[in-house]
Image 1: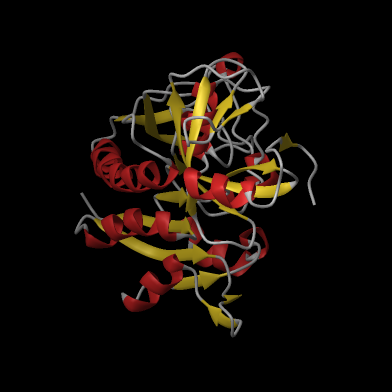
Image 2: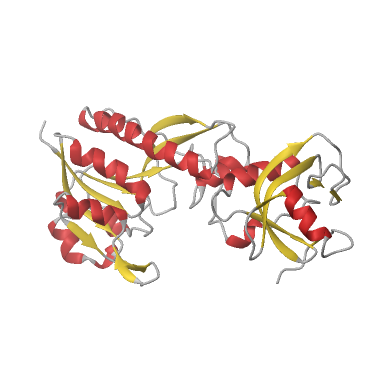
Length: 316
């Protein structure tokens, strides 16, 4: 069989692994790499290329950096229509129907959930938020509707109890490479079995915002708070207000000692908080503008300033 011709669309570090696989295979020809333009970064605000662009430059691959690939008419005519398939991995742009129609076989997208579960921008975080024990790398044939195309390949991935957003991100980055290699074999042998998604089973994983890290202990169980900590580590992290001071939660665990919902208990020399159900210990915390502390250190510091400690809900 002749080499499969591929145009690759991706931007962040997560996208580099699959591009490495395509570039390393002798049965694949990467016709071009499409990514976002360089952006100012760092204190000096110097222009920095996306990780995918850096890989393409280092390996002599044809590169297109564009704010909107849908407007790149000449590129689509000259390169896009030569492709057997497109592969899209965390590209950050929606493709028009005209672009989707270019490749001979199909445009495919790698999505880090067990579709139709968690369509959208933050599937890794939502799997952790909901305490799921497994997820998947799903390769789907792209359509105009977000993450709704027929499933072409599913690769299951176990979520370990200690996984957080960072570790699961890294695990899925590696598992995506395995999934892609297996998928390419299906393409080569023309053995893809497309499975339509049932929209009735779909759930969504919208963008996580910084303010989503605010914890209301009266509205969440101890298990939900621990899951949220895992999902939001390292960003955006969890926080609450103690005596109107913003406190970051750097370590949290479920606690056996019972505490009234929404109340603090410092009688053990630790920072225990009662939740909607159960209790948690906030064993490592950071007051705004201060260094990280153990809960005992924070308690001692606050007791020197306040007569009592109270969880408050006013943001500054």
